[in-house]
Image (cartoon, rainbow, N blue to C red; front, side, top):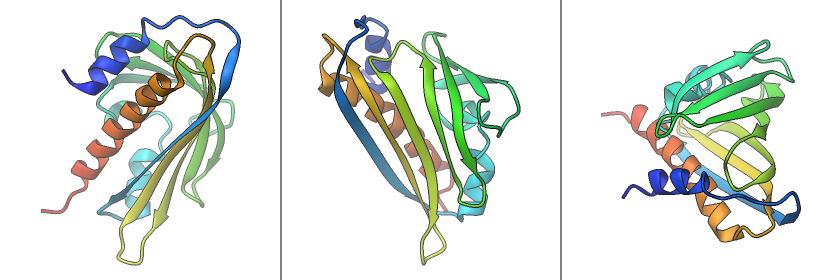
Length: 166
């Protein structure tokens, strides 16, 4: 079974209390065979996660696309569950933005993430996706970490494949 499908479906079954068990962080990085300016045209669009992430079937904005406070409603491809995320910072000059999860069925609380792009000397891009979050009481932090890692890994893998030069 595909680990992303397993973890996304399993995440829906987790019910946590309102008490956080501790701070956790996840960081993933990949090198993409294109320039930051090119990658930013896709990744920098806060309403384009459904275009480049295989787990997301739809993205709808509530607010101006790059204004802090804008929210996006994401629909998961597998089970049509929804996630609400809110933009907390946006800098096209630095090719980075940050957001928080307002509502989701993932086994995390107080989730805050940043996506950033950095040029390499070879004309490629290092894309970094990092987050910190709390784990609800009664939820295994390793499990929560694996869920978030699977989400990041699948999205980043698709980007690497989309921009791979033949």
